Amino acid sequence: MKILVTGGAGFIGSAVVRLAVRRGHEVINLDALTYAACLDNVAPVADSPSYSFEQVDIRDAAAVENCIARHAPDAVLHLAAESHVDRSIDAPGVFIETNVKGTYNLLQSARALWERRGRPETFRFLHVSTDEVFGSLPADPSVKFTETTPYNPRSPYSASKASSDHLVRAWHETYGLPVLLTNCSNNYGPYHFPEKLIPVIILGALAGKPLPIYGDGSNVRDWLYVEDHADALLTVLQNGQPGRSYNIGGENERTNLELVRTLCGILDRLRPRADGRPYAGQITFVSDRPGHDARYAIDPSRIREELGWRPSVTVEEGLERTVQWYLSNEDWWRALQDRDGVGRRLGTGEAG
Ligand code: NAD
Image (cartoon, rainbow, N blue to C red; front, side, top):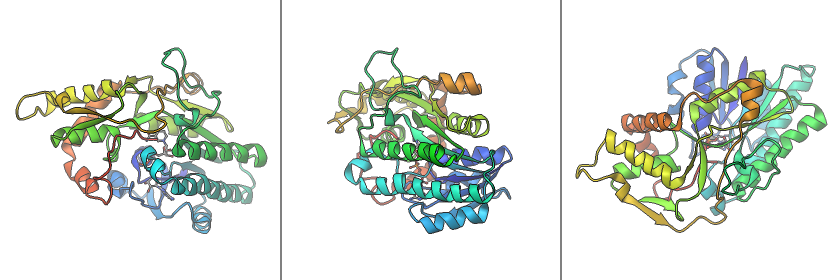
């Protein structure tokens, strides 16, 4: 399959690019290379004849149209977005431009290509979204987000993603474009940008800094290893039913405090502090983010039962692999920490 991946120089997009090339697909990576991008993330496959890169900003309708028309992909896998909740609170405008207008530009160009080719049933537009569009859950563990949970976004980031989800559904209902949607829980793993919670904790611990946790650390997130997410996206792309959405999650609910303590325990084993004291002693609580959602949890029954997808690692295995990856790839994260603005941020935000 010839797949155009948007946002393929980002955290999840690059995992998709690496996996898709390794599975024999032809991949065009379309990315504007914002502050969040790093082409080193795709270095393991960049020399493959099946891989190519296009520096395109999805806010630029003409550039998007040109790129899609030239490559004429069989599928568009759309991940490009502004993804950091804290940044959306400080400066929401670019989230509307990229996440809403950018998605509209892609839909229009994909639709034009699909119509020119005679509306092939096999064409796919897969829009990658977040569980944050559903809002916040109560503590009751029996209540989870399903595909029919009403939308209730509460941050500029989640509102912009919700808007883009509605556009994608409308292009299916109105024009018949064969779209698929996925809503995923929080990802973690190798190549996670240093301003996100898990790298902030690992790198802050190693640097002997305070490990900041919002509020009392009781907010619950449902964690998924990024390579399992990439596998789920290719599964939905190939076997999902057009017009349908799929929730993707690892069924790994943890409070932020539990997660940080687990990371500290792994570091205590793999890279003990020089003074022998536990890293958990560096934990500090900071004032909460405005509108901080209490709990997210995904019910992944549909993707499991209809498409047979399951995560391949437990959260303990995934976190151990992640810590090991950061310990072995210091050059990668040091270069990104030096980027303007990144090192100065509080950096306790969860990914979108
Ligand atoms: P990321 O911030 O790491 O990467 C985003 C990529 O998009 C970057 O490479 C960036 O350069 C590119 N991009 C941004 N604006 C662009 C523009 N205007 N034109 C072209 N490219 C642009 O994000 P991520 O964490 O990899 O998330 C990818 C997608 O998955 C997003 O749509 C996000 O909403 C969704 N998602 C993320 C998570 C998570 O936990 N990270 C969970 C669920 C869904």
